[in-house]
Amino acid sequence: MIRKIIKIDQSKCNGCGLCVQACHEGAIGMVDGKAQLMRDDYCDGLGDCLPACPTGAISFVEREAAAYNEEAVIKNKSEKQKKEKQPCGCSGSAPIFKKSKDNEKDFYQWPVQIKLVPVSAPFFNGTDLVVAADCAAFTYAQFHEQFRKNKAVVIGCPKLDDGDYTDKLTDILANNNVKSLTIVRMEVPCCGGIEHAAKTALKDSGKFIPWQVVTISTDGKILNGGF
Image (tube, rainbow, N blue to C red; front, side, top):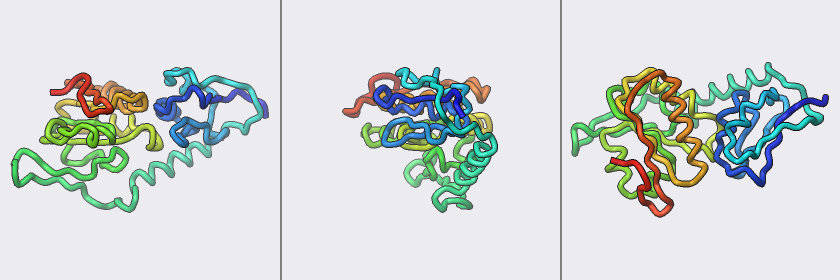
């Protein structure tokens, strides 16, 4: 059938992943660092992804395409949720939360990946939360001292990870006594995805807590924010 559907201009896509987060149907994914329409029948043609794209890489076209299949979309969402509950064989494992021998106020935390961490993990309650890009801890030498110590940390990469962090982060903020939120990102455009997800989650959670964004340069310096 001929119908309206999105088109992604690969030459304009910067790999930020914001469109993946904006697509509630799961029609868009990241392939080799670029956004791609994965299945025609997952795209409802409403275009929630268009305003999320900072480079104007997404537009509407009318072409031969499979009809939107709501049943398939619901089934796909359900399967993804099951995988998130049982990721990489880690299902059923309790989160690790224990005091450091060197500092009774500090603690060890596991897991740290946004996709893996349980919403109800004990280390979220009564502490400051850091949402960080994967690269930040390896690029900024003082990351652990400044951003992890005495805080709960979750990490992710919007360019490489499938799906959206917003709902998970919203649940974490809404269901725990988080004292503050710090977003640590790299200066590269793709990190805009993790900043957007965290800010949206804070807004959607209904919580009013202090927050800040810290940007790390590719040569390991803090460009703005910080303590």
